[in-house]
Length: 484
View 1 (tube, rainbow, N blue to C red):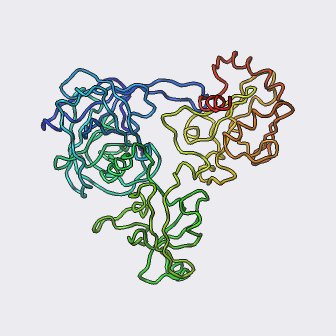
View 2: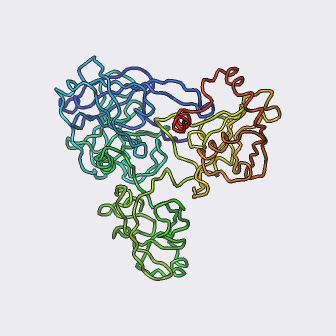
View 3: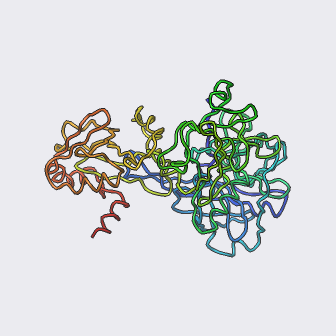
């Protein structure tokens, strides 16, 4: 089975050496100590050590992958020709694009290195050199190859699709974050490879690197906007005739519009999007981004920053309309199950031994106790009435919760007869109940009853028995402090 893997090398050391003096001194090795949270037991975490690569791009900034520095607790950077490691910190990160900027705290680090320039999007078959510190040695490694493909691929770190470069240069764990160089300039950043394959690797291309750097100009990262629709190709002649498309017309059909997304109130089901920002959408749902080169139609929207608008040419009920859609809603708000979390601890609270948490992708991808409900919920849209799914992870056995100790992965939709909006709403309502019973109901009408007095009486005892310091996560503790 072929699997995409992140190319961070989890061990100890690696190092530098190359022919071109300026380039090899601009490529650095990054040592990361990070905290790995347990989403099954969210009060626990472990530590990991890993290494990756990066490139100095000027203004005391080093460009690397987000996955090289995500969840980091301590960073060090080492440059070519030096045994010294310098302490560094993350200054900007886009987990969507798997890109990050870090800065070494001491300015002397930059005294003898020149910045690498960000180049243009390379062409297919263009020769490249990949620099980095992969496994198998301690010095700087350089491998050569060509750009094999330019098209949208899934970025493993975020599980979202963006333009990427496929290359045949050998890349291995530890290469992550290193630059690919063509004509003396950076044309991509190494991000992932494919196991069980011969020299297939992927780079974040310069067009997405430049999007990231422009996004950060105001000091914060907003991300890459989306239309927030589900769509499909419309290639067959019968469908084209039914919807009134001329022979020369092509596009994508809108199947669903996300209620909290950017297109809600603008696009409708069965709208045919013919063009985005004047760029024609082809029969296979692609657009031409350069002469004779095509990729996913979402590429045109990907180029925008949050706060901008995108213009659509739409065929609606066999009539042409033009829509201007503002891009203001983030991807994190539109799905019922929130996407992968990084650089933050899981939210949770324990009530009488019952462990509650919001359902996030990290939780679905970890542990043994997966179920079909979790997978199905990945396709559910958030609405104003239901913005987040709460999950009962499990129960810490105690005499107060006898009979319910085998519960896990329970997904309540109602609390005491009222719909649950999100995790914060759920938590606030639970702690406001002073006596009586808590009645949870899931989508299959399975009920869980908790007696409030027993839960409160057992709370301290349970935390002590299981050696748990806090009954709730730091974000909920901060919420309580604000109320006081």
